[in-house]
Length: 91
Image (cartoon, rainbow, N blue to C red; front, side):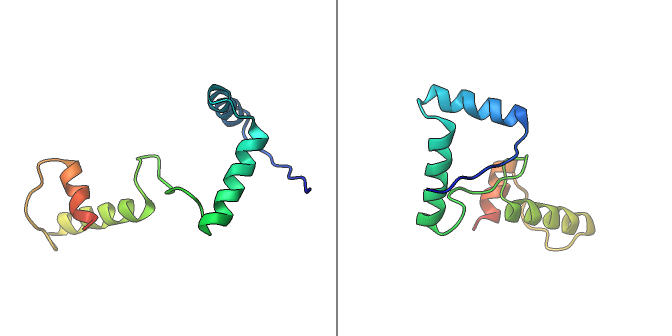
């Protein structure tokens, strides 16, 4: 058996512990499950999101589209809301 030692922000550790306690799992078990899922999925087992709740790809596409719209390039039909716009980006 190997040992892993990590440094983590105290606030994140406390917040994660609170969540894990609520589901009856200790930190060590949660890390083991996470590492097993990395092996099983051969990657990070969940989408990595920005603080806006978007993937990096979605955020880059929105920034590019915003820049193009400002310049009048590749402007297509209007969208009623951000949800419809993101749906169009994901096509």
